[in-house]
Amino acid sequence: MKNTIIWLVIYFAVLIWSAIAPKDDFTWWLEALPGMLALPILFFTRKRFPLTPLLYGLILVHCLILFVGAHYTYAEVPLFDTLAQWMGSERNNYDKLGHLAQGFIPAMIAREILLRNQAVKPGAWCAFLVSCFALALSAFYELIEWWVAVATGTGAEAFLGTQGYVWDTQSDMLMALVGAIAALFFLSSFHDRQLRHLGID
Image 1 (cartoon, rainbow, N blue to C red):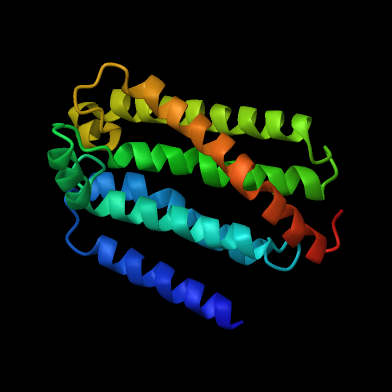
Image 2: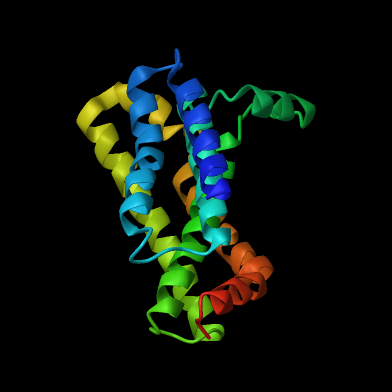
């Protein structure tokens, strides 16, 4: 219960901050919506399909990344402007962090769902299918960005966040794949231990 309260306080504190005078209202809704949808999904599945503490923590981190990007737009997050200056680059790479998370966190969600439903066993096939899911999700998100851009014209420029980089779509998907592989490499053993606490071998 205590952890849930802390989770909700952090979530709503950053969401409210994000919604106050964002850089662009239209972009804010586009970027923040997935994070806002996460809360009711978690609420309505909390008893029927409670997740591991690891997953709840990762989902919160992903929501915070979305809310920060929504507030500033992904091309104008101040800290990443500073990092770009230090590195002698003109590009704000906060969007790459977002796409890394887009692979890292959904990969662990997919892993938990697959293992708990006994669709696969832990191991190579599980890792392969989870990586494929993360890459497919990233590709689908790029399609959504394309559809929004076509539907709204220049209004979606901040949402796309390409910053003139011709290979932005491909590099976004690569970052998601790297994130998925990193999550599997670093967290699988810890995740398995938490799944065993839920009675899942």
